[in-house]
Amino acid sequence: MSPLFIIGFGLIILGTVATAWPSPKDYITRLINLELPAFGILLVMLSFDETLALLTFIAVTSISTFLFVRVIEKREGTP
Amino acid sequence: MIDTFHIGMFAASLCIIIAFFSFMKETDDLHRLLLTDLASVMALFLIALVGTDLAEALILPGLVVTISKLMALTEIYLVKEGIQRNQPARTLDIEVLQSAPAILASILVLYGIFLSGFSGGAVAGLGVIFYIICKGHQERFELIETVSGYAWVAWIAAFFIILIFPSQWFLAVMIAGGAILIKVTAKLSLIGTMRGESDV
Image (cartoon, rainbow over all chains, first blue to last red):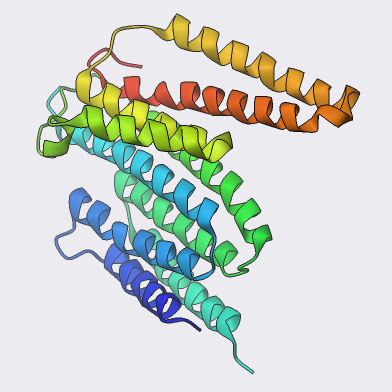
């Protein structure tokens, strides 16, 4: 069990708790807290040498962040 | 005997239970959408624990399904709440989106072409999305669709080359890799036009 796996593993658990119960309960806090488990899973993939999955995960995560930012902006916006 | 896989399984079960309880108590739909993304991360963690080439082969379609599901759900949410024509609030004004996007986009596109194949197409498409979001766009859908159609034809032709002339497999693999790169790039760059003032 490599140190990378242990760090990623801890980040996933902490990040899940932080995303499930964010402290000021609004959309942006939850969106930022969601990056914690995502970073944890990146470290887990790195420890298992899954390069292709890691690169694609980075690309897909940034697209999904754009999508969420767009929806939150529309939600908070004025008609 | 407790090894890495079992520890990971316990952690994943714990996280899934936490996410489930949080999901159950949530009433706001957008919060639920964000928790859906958390659930997909849990699923990817479970698959990644296998730790072989099989895991890698399973993660790639999982990621594609995740992003298409998110796109569809966000569109449905916007229509359901009737906020599709809202003027977006600028609370999340990201500085990088205004300054120096061209060099970042070109780095991403070059790296995607270097990777080639499906992942390369995804990375290059991300670069194009980034550029379109930052710099605005004109309606050039016909051009993108035409390029995508020709790439599709080249992909099919590569498969026929493999089936009919198996000795030319290297040429066919190269054609298929390049064609799927162009096709995924074209399809992904359409996402970038969603953010503009004219609605999708």
